[in-house]
Length: 77
Image (cartoon, rainbow, N blue to C red):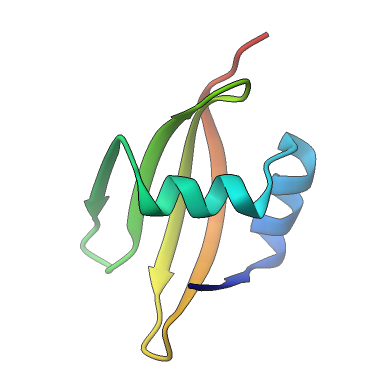
C-alpha cells in the first residue's frame, strides 16, 4: 500500500499529530466507510488516544492511495 498526500492532508496530519501508521490503520480497518459519487472514499475509525478520525482519499489506478484530507469527528481531551 503506497500513499501520496496532498499538501492539505500533510498539513492536517501535522496539526493533528496523526501518523501515516494511523492513516493506514483507518483505511485497512475502518469502523465505517462509504464511497461518494465522485469516487472518493471516506473512512472513519476510533483511534486509541486520538479520538474519532475521518480520512478522505481516492484509490488511483497505479495502486496509490491519494489522501485528500484528514479530520476529527470528535477529539479526546
